[in-house]
Length: 188
Length: 374
View 1 (cartoon, one colour):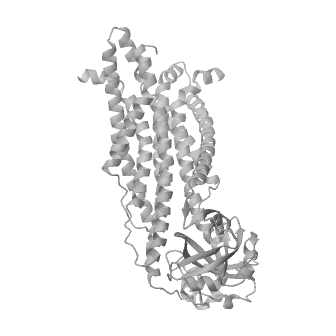
View 2: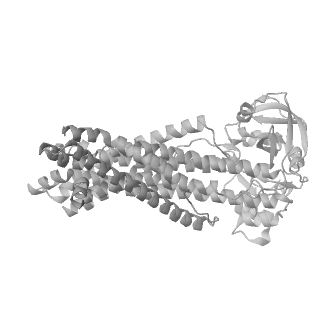
View 3: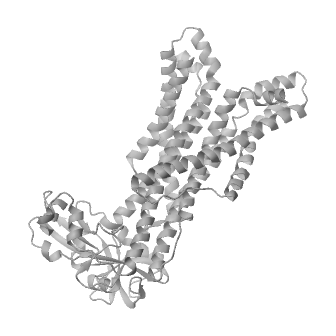
């Protein structure tokens, strides 16, 4: 099992670099989302008079501003994750192709690819949201301290973590498809 | 040298370029976004009249909710002051839309702001002007009667639109009326205004001199604070609570905007580091071969850094242009506002420099560190 994992993952140093590049791109969007949640979660107590309309209008503007910024980053991250995923199998293409030449079955190669893909996607998701959320909390606390602003905690809901997984896994596999085809056909 | 350069193909930097381009776009988009929002917020008060002095309450959390004594009479006639314009900002509702009504001395408006007017200036408190953007948004035309509900007093008035104007400032999102109508809607008497706009003739007349004029006994070190103290801020029921809410909101949004910039810068630096490291790992066999045939580390590093600097600069500039176009499209398709004024994208050299230099420097440093290990 350990041997299979080693074969699937290849050089750990290379794998770390690849996973970290993908992870941090995802962390960018996660951090943005956590910061936007600060506005979403702001407690609006309500005002007895018509001033409430004014305060609500201003808060809705703040939400829109934060949301649109976050959306533009998400779009960027989706494109970047797909493009970078194109290269995540490159470092093992030679090894896998050699194995095919030496008579390994396609099922075995697909198994190796699947393990590598699962490890990369899982690490991207797990480390991505952890790094993104932690960075958002650190920079928000730092900035709030400088501006003397009320400290709210940037957070992510469970639903958002699931949404992130739904986005990351298919994006990584979509990006890896061209390299996968090459490996399976032994056409590196 | 040429052979050496061709031994290290541009294509080997694909991942690094993707990382640089991604982070440059993220930095540019965030930077331009933050600056556009901040600029709109500031311009909603200054109305592009840079050089003029604004006197407003520094005690209230936002200038929009503060009130000061109308000291125009005390300032009039002071040497160096050319023009004075007391203004009252009050939030109102028209057809369930919350907007600002700005009351001012209409006879001096053109001395502060250039504008094109369709129709005529209001002749009395029953007439108002409407900014071009607001008129399009709410489909308001000259001669139309507007049912205005004052948010501070909950009172309702009917006014006729005497004209529509275009000033190319945030004033285009507002309703403009006489000072007396705005004071009535704000629920204050003629002694109170939101701000006083002062046009001065020489640079020696600044906020420092004004603070001395308003109260010589308070010293000159904190002009605006001195002015606001002397001008006696007054609270009006819910206004303090609203001030607290808005102050909190503005402070929070300020923090989020700058935190977002810091977040993008911090994560971008790491993305470029790992992206470049990835490319360097791809290049490892070539780098080792070149070292084994005697190429010095300095020479090798300089070739690689030169390539990454060219790519980084090109990516930074392209990313800035892409970001500006993206923001333009966003602001056109989904208009966003801050304190009820439309945000417009602005160009900023600092953002261009950051989106170009940050990736280039980080990538170069990564290459240098990696080459040292070889």
